[in-house]
Length: 121
Image (cartoon, rainbow, N blue to C red; front, side, top):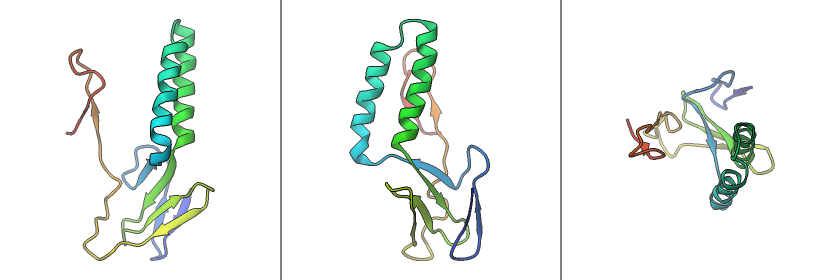
């Protein structure tokens, strides 16, 4: 997908892990999504085959709850798909607004004592 920003810059979405793209989950869907993920884990993770199926279902649930967003690196405009799938544009308040609001990395803890906690780099 390509978005031509109002400033003329091309916003490209052709791969994963892009610094100018995010997946947003509305607050109204947040807790319901976690409840559904809990149900999947509790009821569909007994065997290896069920765990594989549960992974696929959980990814579909998260993908279905989220909306895509992109930020122009030139002017900082945010482009967000709304609930109806229409692309909406949000303009920065001023020239000091971050042009990297959607970028960032996280590391998931893997040690037994902190599994599941998010640690900032």
